[in-house]
Length: 133
Image (cartoon, rainbow, N blue to C red; front, side, top):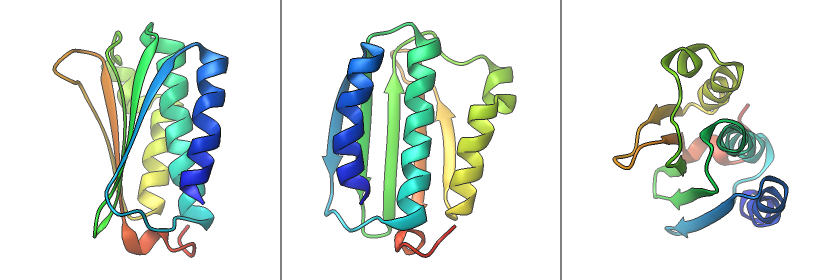
């Protein structure tokens, strides 16, 4: 499922990128399998690749929140931020938004108060039962 995949992937990403990733899980976990898990994982992967390639920092935060209505994923860095054109037209950004839409969810990009970028993915629970996408 998704949780095991993240537990496996995040240490690998840390080693490959040299970025320290603070990982927080909260809420009452539920199984996320199948296409739902793949789409959430790919959004995380793209967001962390963007941190590695563009942010110019050695620290990122990943937050996975299980709620009664769904799943929220945040990837945050306090780096250089994203140019407005890249936010709208960058292939990675477009792909992340498409994955969110396939799951009936939303993906937004914001700017934390400390500067940098935060990518927020919100997916309804009914889309994560292994049958969506």
